[in-house]
Amino acid sequence: MKVTIETRKTKAEINRILHENTARPELFHTDNTKYFVGDILPDTFKIHRIIRYRNSFLPIIMGKIEEVDGGHNINLKIRMIIGVIIFLIFWLTPFLVLSIASIINFIKARAIVFDLPHFAPFTGPIVFIGVYLHYRFEAKLAVNKLKKLFE
Image 1 (tube, rainbow, N blue to C red):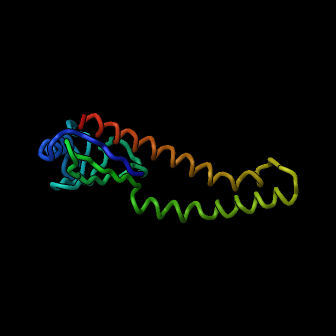
Image 2: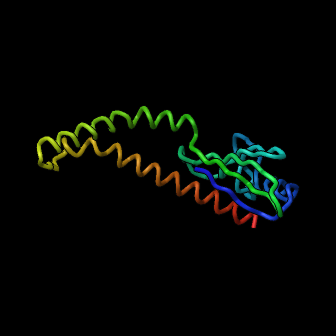
C-alpha cells in the first residue's frame, strides 16, 4: 500500500514532529507519550504504531521525505512484516488449492452442496479476507495519525 502526504512544513519540522512522536526501538516501551516506534533518518524513516496488545498484522511504515515546490511530500510504503507474509503464503496456499478444486467440482456437478466437507475449503479465503481487513484497518489508523501530525 502506498500513500503520499503533502505538507507545507520544512524538512526540519517534519523530522522534529517524527522525533517527538516516535520512540526508539526497545524491548519494552515504557514511554506512553509516543505513538510510533522506529528509526528516523534525515530523509527516511521506518516506524510502526506502539500497541499494548499482540498483533502480528501490524503494518510497517517506511517513509521517504521529498522536497517539492511549496513544501514536501512524505511518500509512505506500508506493508506487513515479511515473516507474517511468508507464514500466510504457506498457511493459506493449501486452502486456496482446495477452494479452486471445490469450485471446479461445483461447476462440473452443476449443484452447490453446503455440507461441511464442501464448505471447509472456503475457510482459507475467509481467513485471508479477515486478515487483510484487519491489516487495512491498522494501516489506516497509522496513516490518519501521520496525516494529522503533518497538517
